[in-house]
Amino acid sequence: GPLSYHASAAGKVKVEPSKEIIRLPEIVLYDHAGFGGAYARTNLSFHYVGDFWNDRISCLIVVSGVWRFYRDDYYKGPSWDLGPGYYESFFTEKGPDDVVSSFQAIALT
Image 1 (cartoon, rainbow, N blue to C red):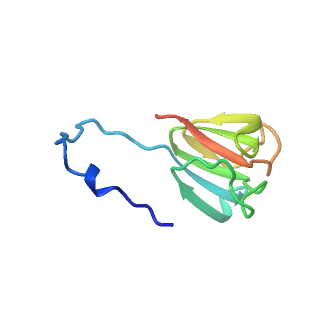
Image 2: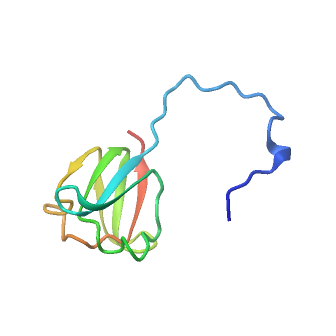
């Protein structure tokens, strides 16, 4: 269901806003090499990418953060780490294409 918060936890302690700029990890996934086809933008980790995206990710943009991509669901199997950049042909040098089943952010950049 929708996200909710417990009202009794809100507003009891005054917290000063941070002056530090924090960039959340963010990626854009594509199902075709060369940034084509369906795409999805997220800053969330997925223990399973879902039936549509499973074994379909062909290229991506790592906007920020360092991300670890796994061959199997629940962060298992061989993995590849990628930092910020454009990966036009996602696994050309790292391994085979269309094999990712889960991914997670592992560091801020």
